[in-house]
Amino acid sequence: MNAPGMINSTRTLAFGDAAIAEAATLIKSGGVVAVATETVYGLAGDATQPKAVAEIYAAKGRPNFNPLIVHVLDLHMAHRLGEFDRRAEALAEMFWPGPLTLVVPRRAGAGVASVATAGLDTIAIRVPAHRAMRALIEASGRPLAAPSANLSGAISPTRAEHVLASLGGRIPLIVDDGPCEQGVESTIVHEIDNATRVLRHGPVSVNALLATIQARAGEKWRDIPGVERFDPGLSGFETRIEAPGQLASHYAPSKPLRINAIHAEPDEWMIGFGPIFGDASLSRSGDVKEAAARLFDLLHEADASGKAAIAVAPIPGDGVGTAINDRLRRAAHPR
Image 1 (cartoon, rainbow, N blue to C red):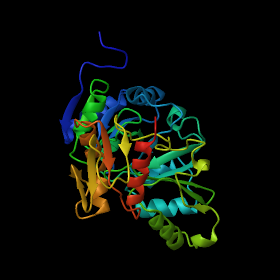
Image 2: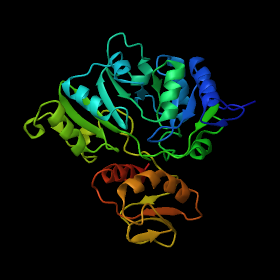
Image 3: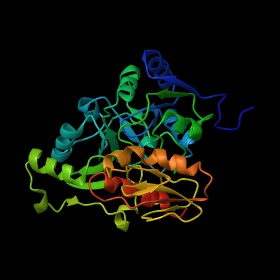
Image 4: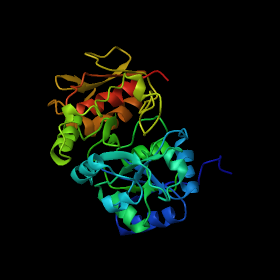
């Protein structure tokens, strides 16, 4: 007999019509499947079915106060779930489909299970760009709640084999469509009453967000007190969990992790960047976009090495480097 929460086996199917059809059948029956997205692999279930969302939480071992991102096909579908102010509309039109999540007021009668929003009166919505996730939303005809497809708090998966290593025996199916292009989770923006907060850094930078608000919403952001730059050290952003990835310890390997390291100690596996090579490098040319795409891949490799700890070279804080450093700070946070 299987242990609670376990199944006989987890199958991996290459992306294609047959894989999507099988995955959609599982979704419609209240099951969950792992699927590739442009950011990381997601663990998808029908956001309108409480049982399906509970299956996601159970598979991940995720705290039920942490809300999930609901993935939809387009802005029209998003409007059925949430209420968009002027800024949210401008950001959605600019960055969707893509790696931006908008936290907006939940629309009355949206039909999304309250467990997916952790009982909050807001909802986190994203329109993904990846063909596999888009095909699954279309084939299932459902909005899909889909956090990263890994055990809660562990390293996020950017390949199907990462998912299998973390959730093998806990989910029935993985739709494999190769490595994820972006390699870090979406930027999350809390957008209500034309007041903007960045809850999680990601591929869409703060500067790009602010430029869009200025250009498309007709506002000069420097004159608007509602725009706030997110700083992980500000406790006000940590006291209430409003979106995924806000827990202090997150994205964590099983080994201790030291950041901003210039060289490795004898017991450390070194992840390099730029002129610091290490055992493997995020980017020898110092390209932060390449580093983002390789980040979780190398954390998995380091965690599986024979060394007792992990060290990571300094990463510049510009652009997506902000997101990389946010993930590394959380991965290094004591548990």
